[in-house]
Image (cartoon, rainbow, N blue to C red; front, side, top):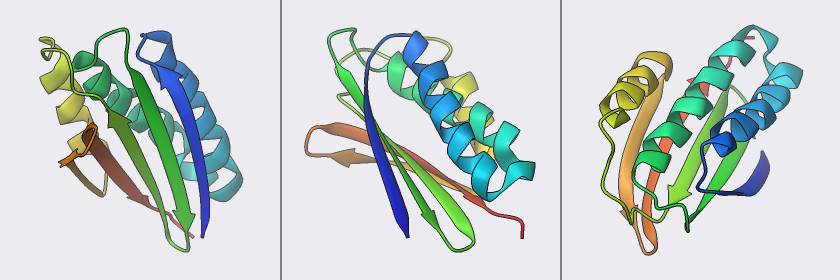
Length: 118
């Protein structure tokens, strides 16, 4: 198991930066899923950004295990959700093999998993 973690400011450009990191990691392990990884992480961040004030920080955790890649975005949940949040959630649910969201001590966490094709 390999884990990466990266913090980002709660600003729109962070979604693309996080998606590029995730895509680079996925390309080395499962190239056929790399474009899906980009869209998935970009939309996970979209969900988190819709609920985070610009003062907040988002934390991306990527865990690669045999047969799967797991993404978590931890966010403060300190801002009212924007109108585009449901579209981001729908995209996540369509792309991910598994996904969910839960309350944490510091806010919320949304996650998604992709099962890697050998």
